[in-house]
Image 1 (cartoon, one colour):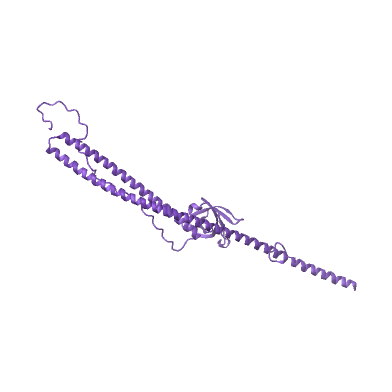
Image 2 (image 1 turned 90 degrees about the vertical axis):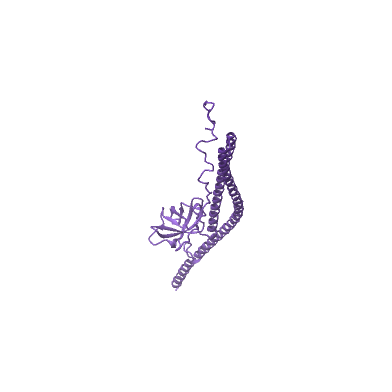
Length: 312
């Protein structure tokens, strides 16, 4: 009888040990047994900490973007005011050029009248002196017109450059605010870290790639995977491979093309405003000099007979 009780006791103790072992579980098997539930709780706490850090980083990025946007808006207002001042200067220069052209035409007409007067009056020296003075005035006016045109062209080029810079800044801010990369961005995979599940890209902020945006990996013109951008630098970026997005039988490789997600009907980009070219000067010279320039130094006259006509 004692042996039977001993055997039953041993069986009960073995069952109790087996049940205790099952309840304890495995610290490598999440959610199974006591150790498994402890592991699951630790993993959940770690995931919560990561999400809280990501939320903090996102809030900081949003605050930085809003600060940058305020700065850009202020700079935009300043540039707009400068453009207004430049536009007024351009208008003043245009009016000044028009006045100089009118003066040049008047001087040319006066030169023509003086040349006609040579035939009517005998005081050739006085007429030539007046012609020389008028020709000098015409050359000075022509130089002023050329300088005015060059100044206006330079101001127009500066204005066009400022407008292009503002347009680029506005686009980059809109990409950051929307959380999407430049829709025209195209780069390639520089390196692949398959065991860690991320890649590095050959382009970054210089192409308009935005942190936390989604990109496509393309091979032979077809998407084979998607990436989530995690880090952006001036000429490079890093992105996680979204596991569920990889096409069956494919894998992300070095050299694959990466682009922004494509839409069925992308909006056509607005054409950049063409710079205003300065008005060309008139084709005809303002005051063409005659073949025999009366302003050129006169050669030493050869001795002539006393009765020779000095105007012959």
